[in-house]
Picture (cartoon, rainbow, N blue to C red):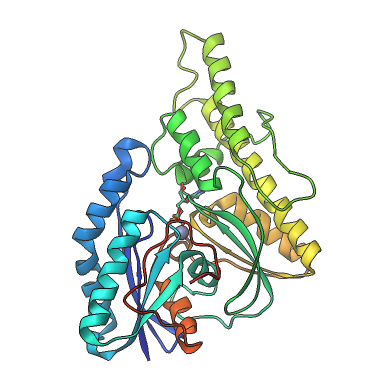
Length: 347
Ligand code: KG4
Ligand code: ZN
């Protein structure tokens, strides 16, 4: 059984084919970084236009690499939210049109649901056995959430960010320091050469809650830079190559990752879980990967972290979640519409 997955929720146009829910035959992602780079963040209108240009070439390539024709498909799984409404509209309209014209079942997938299962994808495209229950940590440019996952379709949100997502904080701090976009990999890389304890940034632990908050940290970085510039008006201390920027990057990163890892530990304790599955672009972060590995091994638990290509947005995860939705009988009609804020579990 072949399922085609499609994701256009944000700034990546992605299509993938999965066979029997067990093997990813192709996963094509057309990245829009070059389109948005000069703006230091995603421009929604430009993202939708680029999706329109890329959706067919990307889908055609996914089918070609998989060696599958449209008529071989048992279903098309499409992400219909959450995300940027204009971007989602492109993927949904495209999938609906093909399903309608080819008589192919249309399978709705929540973007977060895709991330929840992407942790079980291997580099070679094989899918690991999924063990329930587990704690899913989704950390991306749009989301920072913790879910308890008891089975396919059985998700309980334990916590979420109250303001910025972790990746958004990385991107905004990078923009503030004129380091470039996306900020996550740049700050992660600079941090390797800086001291994480050089600057003491606040950590919003929000006692008694598994929620996150990163906007205060972002403001603290802004004040720190303003103060340093005021004290050094004639010198280029705030430049990409300075020791100060490396220390600032490492200290900021430590503040973000400390909180995330602490919340994961609290969630494991509270829910009595010992398996952690990570996904989302920030899941590529070197410090997060190292600290989570240490935490889980200390507790004798298990950690599932996908290779980098499945951490960030992709359609393999949509195809995988779509396969399981399909076998559970979840198909949609032509009235399926994209929803910008789509809570998990509401199709
Ligand atoms: O999952 P993703 O591709 O898209 C969203 O759904 O948002 O995640 C993109 C986000 C960006 O904010 C980017 O800065 C961040 O993931 N990111 C990282 C790293 N690589 C990507 N953040 C921290 N460290 C990284 N190594
Ligand atoms: Zn995502």
